[in-house]
Image (cartoon, rainbow, N blue to C red):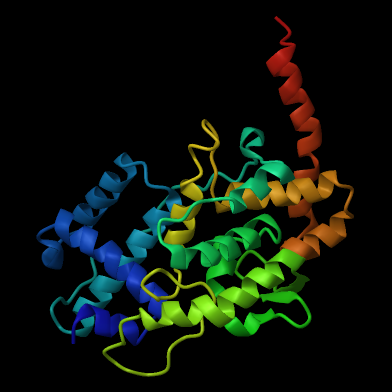
Length: 294
């Protein structure tokens, strides 16, 4: 049994693809990976840090490596696990960076783009629309299935994650039209591009598919938003800053904090409340920028 077959018994298809890519990079960088020690795994993580990889990528790489050594244990190729209890101390930056927030008008411009591959035009507009209108996180986006979209009612059901609650929220009129075209015309064409699984079985019904027809695992979402960096030089544009912008804009429009909390799935009103504080912070930021007290 090879590593990919082992993963297919324990993980979702999208996770299998992600872990496989992460491990390919590890095996190239650490030629003696099969017999590597704890120190060598740590050195590899240090290499990723030097490449300025974010905490999410570091965590993903470590999980893939851990699965690799679980596989070696399972197949009897090793009798120990060098990084079973390895924990990364890196911390995510949870603060709201005011300079990276986008106005509703700026977010709308993200829908206007020229695609290299015509088949991806509608798919990418669907993805971007779910970011700029519903403020979905990457984790929520990759969990969406065809069954989560109700075109008759004009709603999308968002499954809960570790950090967010499940909820059913409304779609914009233009989104309903986009989704109808995507689900009935584009999605079936993308599925035809998918390579059949060596284990057979029924295909997953993920909503967002890649150019190859596989379920989106998050990498494509980050890549897509990253293509807008030239449009907004000097600002960080990614799913996180887009979501933060959506929340901040809703509160600036006077929406009740409880309604916003439910809309974006925050488990605690305190999480939503911190976005309301950004108005005062933004005012102070502008004062410091244009009228510094020297």
